[in-house]
Image (cartoon, rainbow, N blue to C red; front, side, top):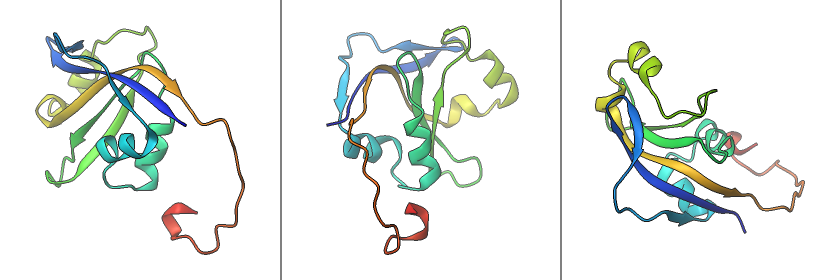
Length: 125
């Protein structure tokens, strides 16, 4: 079974920092999708598939529709938690940020199965 261990974080002084006293949370794939990709749209699910240890994953409010959530996975090349480059590019990022976690562990299911996608909706094909 897929298992994801995430440390709750917050944005402080231009970088992500772990929330003091917060214990890491453990998710399976359905719970991870519920929390970080509630739209269940294919791009959001693909974003979650790019998670790796040391990255930051979270949700922000959409720029045009504040009721809609977008997810992100961020891994700086220097492995830092600094966001100054994002805050320069998008000054609204901080106020739109809803949740953020540091990815501590990612374990994907090791079984790969191919199946017929004929009866699935277009976004799942």
